[in-house]
Image (cartoon, rainbow, N blue to C red):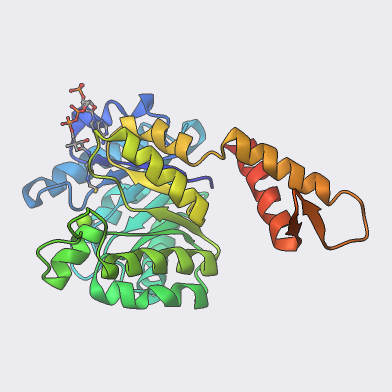
Length: 291
Ligand code: COA
Ligand code: MG
């Protein structure tokens, strides 16, 4: 499942849901959590369920995820009861406390799928770094058997609230160390678990230049994609997660340098290349072909 861009749409917004068909994101996240006020949760559930039912899996152009409310109250159970018959492709679990929470959600999903006669296994996308406990548990995703886990992300704003922090950036606008740690753990854990590493959204949605630069830098680091909050961010994210023409040309040269059989090393422009360079080059070409 290619997930470069995942766009949030508040699940109670008829107006924004009506725009969904024109948005070429890899996935849409119909949100029932933080973008929906308590008094409108039921309205959000009903609208989201209706949206899913009007977009049956075989006719979907984009994957449809639903962000439920955090486990621990009856709200997420009510969310699942409302939306599972609509066969979402995945569920986003906010404020995830660790692998046990993903396993608990897996059981719930299995029951709903059986009841609704669904033909596919709903995947889970966990927002791991959104609470102090969640950040500390992030490393353990890589050591757990979680066949439904499709990706991990993190959330610096909820984390700041959980820490009682007045802010999460320094005077230059860069995330403080604690948040960089949460971000880095998310990347490491996702890779250890063999799932997609998706960065938190860029909330300054008018600043497309900064978003593009951020996406290029994230891809260089190994991230697979970035969450989006505004439709205009989707194309920018796709552009940022695409290797540049120079990178592809260089990767092709690296692959060529290994074409003569029998040696595990090669040289290109006076630089030694061995297996990791070849693997990196192959990945760049693969990304270029799929993106
Ligand atoms: N999904 C679908 N349509 C969206 C959208 C979204 N996430 N964000 C904006 N739009 C629509 C708007 O309704 C607007 O439609 P219109 O031209 O018919 O009025 C159009 O795109 C342009 O939007 P714009 O005026 O630039 O932004 P806005 O001020 O209306 O909305 C936000 C800004 C941030 C409130 C909005 O983008 C949003 O709701 N984002 C998702 C927030 C969310 O889910 N957060 C939770 C996870 S962090
Ligand atoms: Mg939140």
